[in-house]
Length: 481
Image (cartoon, rainbow, N blue to C red; front, side):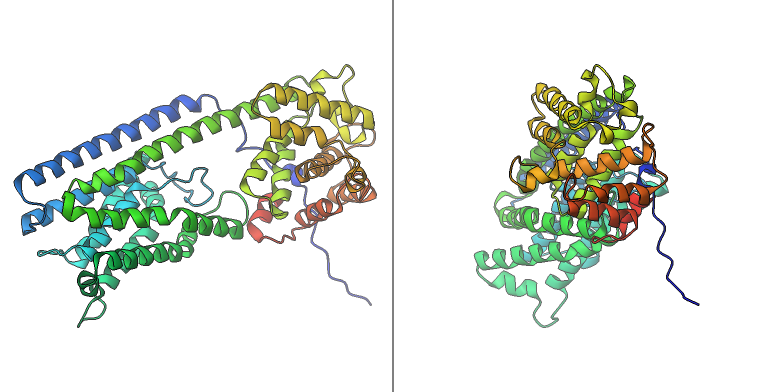
């Protein structure tokens, strides 16, 4: 009697739903209204903050701190934190924020919370509030601002907001305790106040920057990556903290340094450039999303004309991005690969005699070349898809030509070639297609290994189909479902 371990069943990747890349043109007007509401709300808050600051300056000298002014300063920080958080992209209930979000902007509210912490580390307050009060001001401002951004006060919205801001609240609490409560005989805050201002500012800058990097694991615990593996999401979050973390850290220290000189208006004045930057980045993201939706709409043209099977472009795009992610492609390369995959069959609209069911895997090499060239020409005509056009044009190149240096073939083109062939073999409807299952499709691809297809790409596809991934379970599960 012999015993053998039963291999894991192969999974049909083409069953992956194509939701998430469907075009929804009616969403744009709603997005513009929502963005206008957030900008208007944030502008009103900042205007009120400036008015309160000006009033405080008019009734008290900025270098005089009594109990009344200390409470006014806390109110100023509370209003600014709330205003900044309300201008962030709303958190959708049930889906955590994190590095999977398309835009990378500085959260003005979270930066103001850091400024509140640093202000009580560099500035000598004669009526300094308690540690609990400082943390409470930061927490209330972030949570209320997040709920205003979501335009919902439901329990689900509150849970989503807490997932976004709880890591920052923990960071603020840790910094406040470190500055004010550790070392009963001589707290760190006392040492910073006695040190030269330049030295104190540098020490605080390093502390905050380090705290933001240490915040990454906590953020990952409360976020759920929408695409890719958890390792990808962690790497993106760490990269974001390393590159962008210096901005909120430096801004918080600058507020603390400028506050004794400018008084309460220092907070809104220094944060104002971040607000304008956030508005500009949001506008850029909106334009980018419009362009992406245009690509999605264009990708439906072959399907609408009946020359390609419904959902083929979406499945190839999804599978191509999964393979590219396993191969270590960056964000920009993955985005270009997705767009090119969505448009890879665009050239079929010019065919006089359509390919049966649009399955180009069985088409003659000359026909494949013609489809690729025509699709690239249509993409270039848009004026904004030159990189994608180059990928589309090279998808019909046999891998052996790339190896022999007869004709270069980008990695994205090799990925799309394999993903397209796999979907054709499983969902085509001509000349013996579809094949019985994923293993049969992979076997057919292996017959062209090194000749038509890049062996490395086919190996990655095989690993994904059988649930073996080098980047963790998240991306694999997404492909297998």
